[in-house]
Length: 113
Image (cartoon, rainbow, N blue to C red; front, side):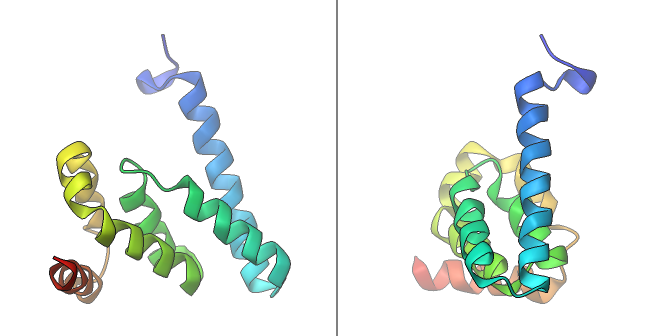
């Protein structure tokens, strides 16, 4: 039925895989490995879902390369209404971000509406 904290084994494995992918993404950016960076950014983009996008956005702003921030922010803005409806609890994860980033997300969302 699940491991520690009620997390299913598959969810834990997916979380570990995503964490490893993020570390590779950071390294590819740091060492300017363009081919690897491009691949990692595409993998990052494909990993975004209504339930993971906000957490990925926060990670990208706190630890990731600029391109990852842009990818995650674009996704959150594009699917904000769906995130509110399907994964509202994830919006609490925006709290660690500086106010100007949250404000920019709001402005981008309002411009799209």
